[in-house]
Length: 81
Image 1 (tube, one colour):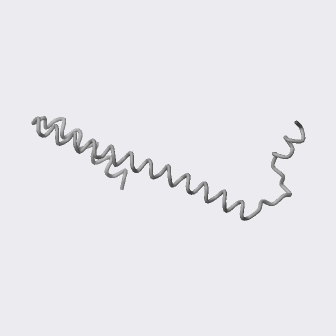
Image 2: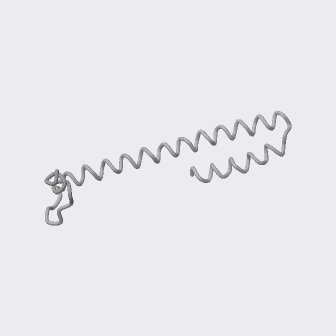
Image 3: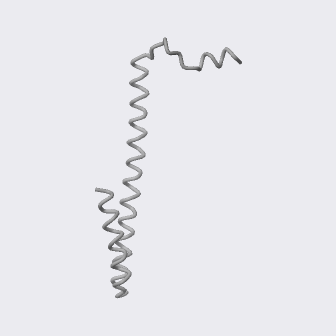
């Protein structure tokens, strides 16, 4: 058990393999790109929902609600851009 602990611990005298470092960094970049893409897609979906809600409010002639939703629509639009 103690030998396993020392094997997994960080060794300041051992340099990491450059290929392994590149592999690790690329994996982290891919992970970050996927999470960013998910955030963008969720913002776009929220934007579409807000647009349909604005249209529905305008059809009902509820201008107060439409104006409030237009403000949130502008916020999501500036965030996604």
